Length: 295
Image 1: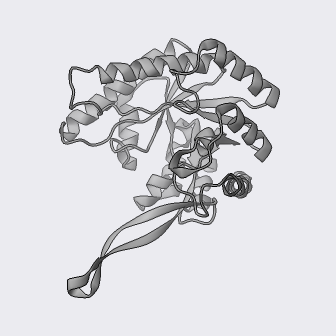
Image 2: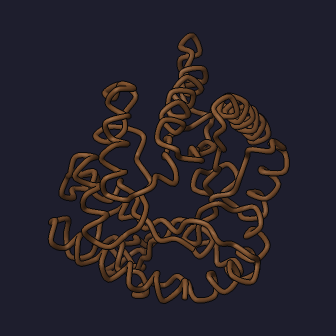
């Protein structure tokens, strides 16, 4: 398995310190990661801002750093935009996928990551499912023109249930549709990390690792002199300090034969704040933990 950094970690989201894409790649090398996943939107690899010449310049920098690009992360929601049916939102996302697939080919990256879709009141569940299946199928057909795979990550509502995720991949039924199966949503569902990791390992090209602690929340009810419990909030911590049983997850991956990329991300508020120093310390500690899990 190969540890890499997802550049979203230094994109300035969630109030964190922001680095440009070239500087985020330099940071990955400085921290000791041996590959990168590139965020396919502003302020990083946005098709709006990057030309093919820019991508070739980025490739030259990555070659100098000795950093291969494993994947490019697209941000899709195939159930989005239904409130304005006259706008070709679905088609625009497929055009976005095509451009990122072109970039992937220029960067020698093998995978474009996609999401499925969020639940919406505008569609019944079955119709939303079918729309997402159709979107990913068309994305796969587009990416195939460039020799690129489409990796489905189990984050959005459609297919986030682990058994549904397997059914979704089966229904897409494209040879270049691959799994990018992560532990954190499965852990929140209290599903069997070991079993599902072992089952999905043969279909996987990448997993993304982040760890979290759960913090209980309450709302004050002054009339009752009491508090009402609310859903927990999760906050990112270095890998190994949270509630996710990564030892079981990686044991399943190994036994299932997975030998792909392990991306580390900081894509939520991080305990300790979003300063560059705290991000660096969290990433270094997490990389050490990932190396132990891989070994």
